[in-house]
Length: 291
Image (cartoon, rainbow, N blue to C red):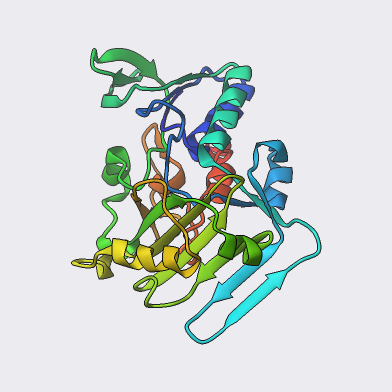
């Protein structure tokens, strides 16, 4: 088995396949699994429990949500922790270690450059040297712009995609006095055109970002909107903005062709309402075993 992409969907699939006795190799083009992928990083406590993910890898306990509009604010806060904000790279490294402990292999800094379907197997060529691997099955978990995914399901249209942008920022005194184990969501058109903005605290920093419909952002400078989000709580950014497409179709109808399967963003395993994908990516990891 060859898995393309070391995000939650790819690694979850690889781990479960390896545990079931399959020989699995995961290829990731970046230096680390899911390295610096844009993600607000909230995961409900129920998901930690369901997938036996230790909360020790999480950054920040969350007890509720503050919603801010132009005219008012609401706070929903529970007595106990309902979830955690976490660094997605740390989660991916944890999942990658589980793949390795289960007998699978995770190879980073190596992109899949070509595949060729033959009767007996799929020929997979990777890296600059085009090293050859043979696979019975390929799982393409390499994001919304997956080339393999676009062949199987067709390309996502602009009105089927969201566009997210996010920066890291220092904690501020203003924010620290207010958030107190809360994630913050802005439902304001002046903070995000045709979408919403967020501030999710981590242990030593906060993630501030916004999401909007890709079809409505042509000619729009999202940096200006993001600057308003940062200014609201006197936040000073510590990183450059990262951008990422988010499929908003829900699960696509065609997720397999011959011996190639799609998972994660490539298969539309994302909530169309919120853009949340980690939970659905982890859940998608088990479905190849059912085919």
